[in-house]
Length: 193
Image (tube, rainbow, N blue to C red; front, top):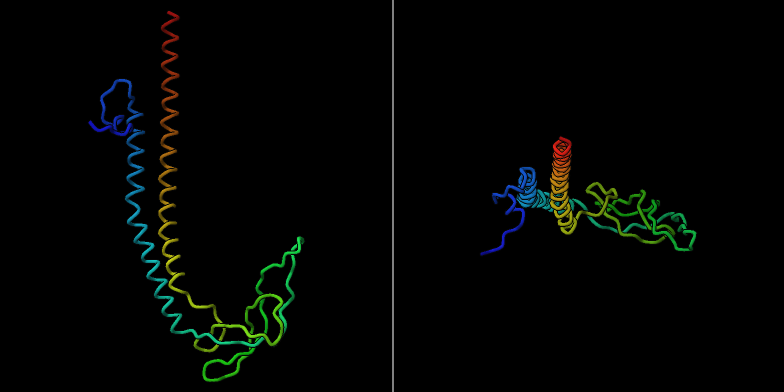
């Protein structure tokens, strides 16, 4: 005969020592586990949809953005140093010049590491009009977004289910404590007689 988990025994076995609240608590635990498991396909579907949307955005941005080289026409502010002497890795905006679409020379502000000096070349991304933009989203970014959305939704659902389960268990515990207190009062009353 196979051994059954204790909570299944509590739910199905006829035993006068098992209270209705014990059966309800065991059923709530089984229900919570089932709800957590049933949420996995929904979270996976949401993560898959987020991944697909990210891949679409990556393809669109790759088609509409181009990488080029900009030359700084001003010095970036100096690197700040922490009190312990370690330099901070910070990005700053500095004036630069680059050649945009159609061979037009443009000037504007680009983001570089602090301490970069005039004349240094930096790689930047341009939109279709020739203005600096962020680097396009990659497939790896889309993958991490999909995994993050799916995992986040499942963990959020799991947290909600766990909170409801804990609240129910606390209420059942208070009910059992009150029931015991009544039984002790009845026993004390019987002994007085």
